[in-house]
Length: 140
Image (cartoon, rainbow, N blue to C red):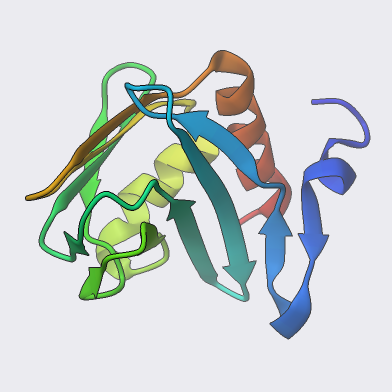
């Protein structure tokens, strides 16, 4: 990790949140997906802005796949969103294994399956390295 990596990607914003640099990843149709990771004390939030193609419910399945093939399923924080805003609380007790994975492995894929849409995003190697680096900068 370069010397100034943490200064480049991690910054404090309003409300005391630490915000990572926004990343742009793409779905299977090359539509952009905007990713932000935020931390507030012991709360880690993974936020995505997806193209709005229909409503997403908290019961819809999202999968995070890491190098080596390990994958974790998460429910979004809100009950429903129809604007493409999806967020996950990585710090909830049942999500501790995925938080550990983010600190130790590269994310290779994000998948979301809902009634109206599905997204599959293969995470580019450089973005995966940056995401792993950012989690290390934030500590746990």
